[in-house]
Each structure stands twice: as C-alpha cells, then as structure tokens.
Length: 159
Image (cartoon, rainbow, N blue to C red; front, side, top):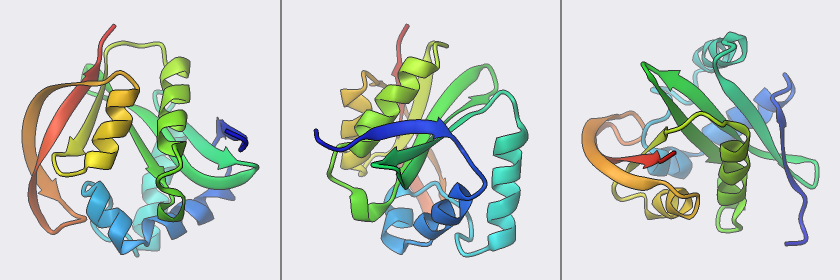
C-alpha cells in the first residue's frame, strides 16, 4: 500500500468529519446499529462527549495521508470489551477498515474482544474475519439504520 494509514487520538476537529460520515444514508443502512437520528447534532455531540470523557473507552481517528477517513473504538459492555469502526463510504473497498481495526487490536491488549455485525453485512464480516474474529453466536436487535430488528453475528477475537 502506498497510502499512510494511521490511528491517533480523536481531536475535536475530527468530530465535524465524523458527523458528515454519519449523515450518509447508505452507510447507516449497512452499519445498521448507528444513531437513532444521524442528523441530530445534539445527539451526536452528546454521544461523543460520553465517548471522549470515559477513560475506559479507546477512541481513535483513522487518517490516510493525514485526511480523516473514520474512527475505531474499543469500549466496555458489562464485563466484555467490544470494538466498532466507521469508515467514510467514499473510502470503502480500499482495506482501510481492516487496517484500522488491526491497528486497534494491536493497541488494545485485553482479550477476548467482541464485535457485532448485521448478518447481511458481508463487507464488515470480512473485515472482522481478516482481523481474527470468529463467529460465536447470533442475536437479534433493533437497528436504527434500518428501522426494524435485524439478525446480527456476535464475533470474538480469542486470547
């Protein structure tokens, strides 16, 4: 790869880009489990205040050649640590999600790590599998990006 993909701590200016990324209807449909109202700036701001003020959450901006292309997160859910990622849809298909998640997995040493993906989100499932995650079960949950419940895989990166 000739591009320079890096993770860095989230800066306040990055949030403008994240908000724009979140407004993409196709990306929301594919991600399924995003914001209830992606166009709500107050909800977006409150969400990111919670992320950035919680010391248990690892939040990283993904840049390529110094341009913000998305973010990756590791966050506690009960006794487990889950990961998630969002890459700007205009950058899909270039391996950025896989490389960004792999970098986050190297940084976050806690195991096992858990991820969730809609069962029909083949691209996200491929990213997770390339990073070593394996399907451990299924669940069903309301997906705001689709407006109804969807089946999802629960994946784990073993120790």
